[in-house]
Length: 135
Image (cartoon, rainbow, N blue to C red):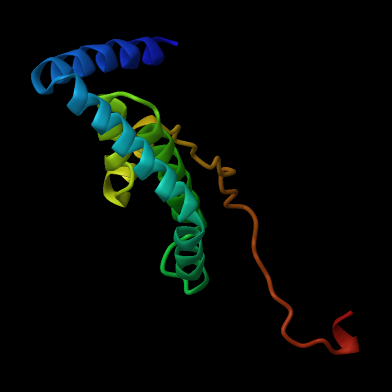
């Protein structure tokens, strides 16, 4: 909740500051252009998804990178559709994978795999010959 309030405050401050400098008509054109760009990105998302799927199949990226790329691209396109200068700037930055990975790494939780403590009294063995004499 606090992140949303901080975002809303910054969005209003940035939008008012930029709008007062460039004027109402230019602000209107920017809002329409960024919404159009977001819609075009959403309409062409299937091509991006196909490219990421090909990269996943050819093992250039792992499953985690695949999901991050696709989710950040979608979220960035939605931010472009939302009116406001700050959301447009973040949405454009999220279209680039470097900035997306920085955002995901900042806000994602780190899960550590818990391992069992190693027991030094256990001896691992492998049966190489499968003859009936060993049974």
